[in-house]
Length: 275
Figure 1: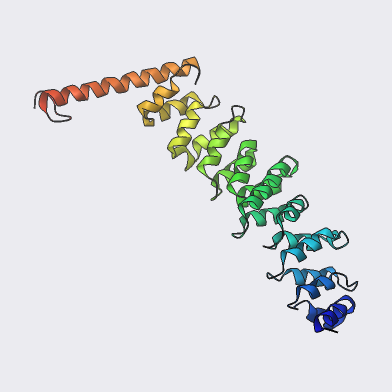
Figure 2: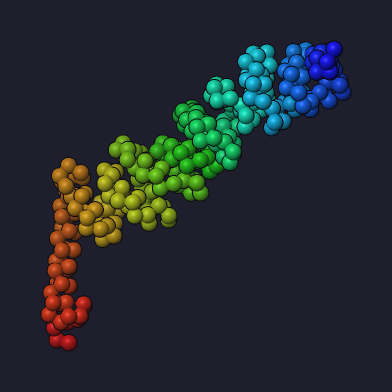
């Protein structure tokens, strides 16, 4: 009888140290046979799943066997294995604990698709989470998760989400693209030491109906004339704000014309006629 067949037979019945040694066997057939061994418990199976060289077919077989998948440690080990097939991983995302999903989104080796699905799971769970977990996610979550928490507008979470080092301008702008935002969100962004000085965020704040007039007027001198003209087009902002925008544009144009006249008469920008 060939050695591989003998080893497979041993793998189906081995116990103790013999079973432990077979967890490191090089033959996929032997590893498949181990799954049929009634003595294989979740601790030994997780040790097997720690091997990064396992074939995808074996991982798929583990995911297919319901008795093996009753244990959470096994589910987690499969979800974190780099060779677990895509469909098996997609099923596992719905069953992972919150912080395991967070860890998966932060692992450098996680594929883009898997990271996106894990983030979707986290965002979908946000409304049901207690405040303490939201604070943890605001501090440790990815840009997308922090952005979703920002848009929720919980007073005790806002500043933490805005300080998240992974939060991106795109996520802040995504939050500000929502017309119906808790008032505190717009105020928190407008007062934040980093985001309140970001040009595109300032532009989005001026557009947002929740921004105060004092905030808007403070930002107008910083905006380009082309952006002011775009904002002043009918239907973009309220009619009362549109008047302020048009006044700012006219003031800029007058200044520009004066500067041009001085240059024409003296040949030196900024020089006066009496010089």
